[in-house]
Amino acid sequence: MAEAQLLVLGSEGVGKTVMLKRLQTLTAQQNLAQALHKQDLGEAPSTIPTIGVNLVTVTYNRKKYTFRELGGAMGPIWNNYFKDASYLVYIIDTANQTQVASSCIQLLEVLASKQTQHMSVLLIFNKIDSPDRLSMSEISALLRLREISASARQDITVLECSFREGAGLTEILTWLQEKCAK
Image (cartoon, rainbow, N blue to C red; front, side):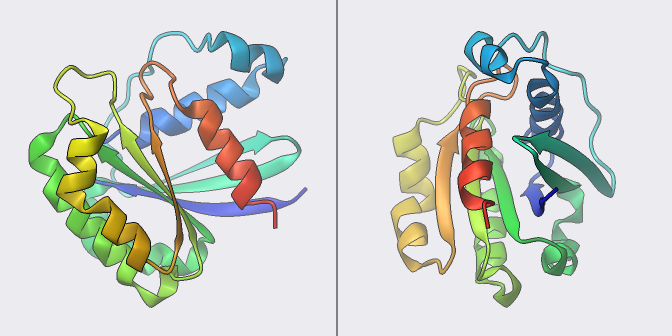
């Protein structure tokens, strides 16, 4: 069975662990096609902040995806883990307006690394269900998303999600299938 190694990064509290638990629940459904249409994932799982590294494996369409989630507090040493991954998932919390700027700086540092130049990147804006969230146009302007995408060497895909409600999970699975098909 083919296996893809993914690195999951983002500041503390952005929803990295919730995303992984939701993907595990979704892919574990007996009838995946029915599950994708129903989106019956139940209540959002409770989580605690990841201290260190969390390894999660998801099997989808006979392919194994191993996600290495690094705690947000580990930001200063994320670069030590770049060599072990072929794909990158970076999550930003759209409801935490004070954290968006620092998340952008961290993202730029990750994208600037020589070790990530070959990676396909999935940039996820989470918590779109929050009434306090920034709109996509506000986020794009604040982060200068167009300039980042134009100047980055990586192939960057942008998604808006709500891991709590399950929105965007099927798009993540589609991205995995398309980008990790090699």
